Image: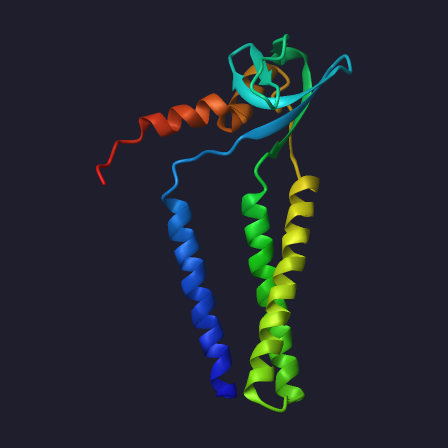
Amino acid sequence: MKPLTLPYLCLAIFIVSSLSATLQAQKLTFDVYRARVITMTGERYRGVLEEVSDTDLRLTSYHGNWIDEEIPLRQIRKVVIRRISKKRAIITGSIIGGLAAGFASYKSLQRNQTSNDINYGITLTFAAAGGAAAGLVVGSFINNVTGRVIRPLDITNPELSLYRQLEPFTYRHQQNLIKRLPNIPQ
């Protein structure tokens, strides 16, 4: 039974990952991004990236209230955006951590044999679970640290440059994309 453990483990991981990818592909949800805007004068604004027009950027608070001011695109020095939902990073970290710890445990158990098959399975299971928990923490931390910095690329027309870069991340744009999808009866 021990030589067949790796193929069964790989098959189980393949089935679980394909099912999770299939289930995630069926959701009609969109990502919401939080933004930190820094202007040329040094003012800072924080909020959810709601919408962008040809001239202005609008942010909302995390509770859905409009922030009083519209920020002109020509005054923006940079925008740092991060995804609010950590779900994707946590799932990816858990999968990678579980696989890495499970594989390391499998290789270690080949060198140091256990007394019976039950101990072998328990050791392998707990190692994979511990790796998944560690990957969950690391994935959450990486999601908090990483962010995308957007700056005006074209000096001659910074408004158009910022508009094109920021539009795909806005709440309104993603909502409009979902509305365009055809309704498929189930």
